[in-house]
Every structure is written in C-alpha cells, then in structure tokens.
Amino acid sequence: MVKGVFYGWWIVLASFFIAFYVAGNVFYGFTAFFEPIVEEYGWSYTQVSIASSLRGLEMGILAPLIGFFVDRFGSRKLAIFGVITTGFGLILLSLTNSLVIFYSACLLLALGAGSCTGLVLYAAVANWFRKKVGKALGIVSCGFGASGVLIPLIVWLIDIYDWQTALVIIGLGMWALGIPLSLIIRDKPEQYGYLPDGEVVAEPIPNPETQEPEVAVSFQEMLKGKSLWLISLAEATRFIILSAVVIHVMPYLSSIGISRTNAALVATAIPLLSLVGRFVAGWLGDIYNKKYLMVGTYCLIGTGMLAFSYAQAGWAILLFLALFSSGTGGNATLRAAMVREYFGVASFGKVLGVIMGASAIGGIIGPALAGWAFDTMGSYHLIWLAFSGLAIVSIATILMVKPEKALTLEPRIGRN
Image (cartoon, rainbow, N blue to C red; front, side, top):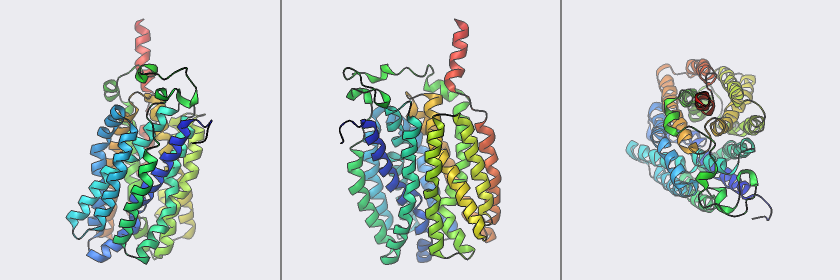
C-alpha cells in the first residue's frame, strides 16, 4: 500500500474490482449465454428467464439476512465467502444438462454474488466515509458499470470454445482475482486508529459501536416507519425494468433483426455508459438533495424505456443508451448514499438489505414477465412500453420519503 493514502480508498479500489468482475460475469454477462443455452436445449425464453428470477428470489430472501450478517460479522468475511461461492456456482452452471441443475446453479450464484457485491461492498465503504461517502460509493458503483467491457470477452470465449468452457474459465478467474481482493477489505476504521474520511485519532478504539451515535432510532423503529418501505417499493419497481432489460437485451435486439455482434455492443454499452451517471450522481449527491436526484434518475429510466421500445431505429437505440444507462447508473450510487444519510451507519447493512430484498422481488418479476410477453406475443414492444410507464410508480413513492432521523427526533425534542 502507498504510504500516506487513507486506507479507506484501498477498500474502495478493491470493492470496485470485485463489483467489476462479479457484475460483468454474473449480472450483465448472462445475456450472452441466453441464446446458446436456448439453442442447445430447446428451452423456451420463459424457462431460461426463470433462472434469472430464481437468482433474484434467493437474493431477495437472503438480502435482509446478509444485511444482518454484515452488521454482525463485517463485510470482510462475507466477501470472502461470496467470492468462493460464486466461483463454485459458475463451474456448476457449466455442468448444466437439465433444468434442475441449471436452476440450482443459478441459486448458488445468487447466494455467492449477493454475499460479495452491492450490499456488502457498500456497507464496507460506508463505514470508512461520511463527508465523502457519495464520491466513495460512486467509485464502487462504477465497478458495476465498467463491467460491461467483459461482455465482448464473454461472447468471444463462447465463440472460441463453448459456453460451458467459458463458464469454467470465468469461475476460476473469480477465485484468482476475488479472494486476494476480499482480503483487503476491513470493517471499522476506528479499529485501526482512524475516523471516517481519514481523520486520525490518538489510538485505536476498542468499541467502535459507541463512537458513532448518528441515528437516534432503532432498526425496529425504522421497520415501523414509512420511509424504508417507500424506498423499497421505488427500487422494486425500478428493478422490474432493469433486470428485464439486462437479461433480454440481446434476445430482443436479435428478434428485430440486429446481429448478435451489434446486440453485444449494445449490451456492453449499457453498463459502460452508466459510469457517467454513477460518478456524477456520487459527486452531486454530496452537494444536492439526494431524493430529488433520485427522481431525476427514474425519469431518465422511464424515458429511456420508451426509446427502447422503438429500437429498430438507430437513433432510438442511442437515445435509450444515453438516458437509461445514466439513470440506472446514477440510481445505483444514490440508493446507498441515501440510506447512509437518511438512516445512518449503525443499521446500514440491515436497512440496505431490506431495500435490496425488495429490489430482488422486482428482479424476479421483470425477466419472467418479459420472457412470457415474447413467448405469447412474439414481440417485446408492448412490455417495454408498459415498463416505461411503470417508472412513474418509483417517482411517486420516492417523493414521499423523509429522513427517519428527523421523524424520530422531532417528537422527542417536543417532549423536552
């Protein structure tokens, strides 16, 4: 490590590359395996889409539990476990010869990826930053966006070898890269003589939990309030749209006459162009109201989906990429930053776990619904139009959110 660099930035860097590899291969990269699997086994689009929904189902069930484990045991242990499990899941997926094995592998991937990406990495970074939390989370979020460059590599591996061999190579790479990076993660800055953002204290603090009384409301009270559930509903709705697009982008573009090579380029561009939104939102989130910035991201997503439904026109694809990618990227950064600001750090993992669990429910619905629409109507056009209108739900619900701290403290002050 370079002397003089705050250790929190090394955690940010390690988290960036873990997010980069897992998102590129497990989340965004799955679309490259979609058609080869359909062609080999003759399964319907709905059957293959259910695999993604099963990943979302397990992540939905596990996200609140993972959030509890992060707050209880720390991000480092969870990340190591998740990296190892993800590697096994990828290799098991390469052994697919039936729907049972295919679905089982996807469930294992959900367990692994959920234990070493979003919630776990964001919690680690949120512990190390306060004033610069937007920028730090923005950089980690950029790891998910930058992962788009892996999609052409995945397509190349499938074309040169086959999809099974490609999965084995990716799985081994998960262990080779992910395990060393996970070992860089540390949980509490106070244990190493720091305060968030790099402020130095005289000596390590043995009980860091007592040093950050930021939130005068318990997790149980948060569950009783409206704000947590409003954010959860907004994100679940957004994830219906996002998961459907990520899984079906290449099959959709192929269905309207766009070559597999060009479809792969579009699939690659979605996360890559989201980098702009991810970083800009992190920077703006440290300056402006995060709630209204979130509204802006949902507007971009809804408008982008409208353009996506007319992707036969080249200009519509470009408009979709500019709007949708910026919106999803900015939202990914702002969600974690908003949780940090509105609910504090003491229950960060549990709160974000509930929100991500709700998001995963949307992830279950989206791909299966899009697959069913294509199998039934032979076209994605109407489902994309419906998803464009669905963004209004996210906008309406996020506007009703209020900081849980303020809601709790005001009545207590009045009693004094």
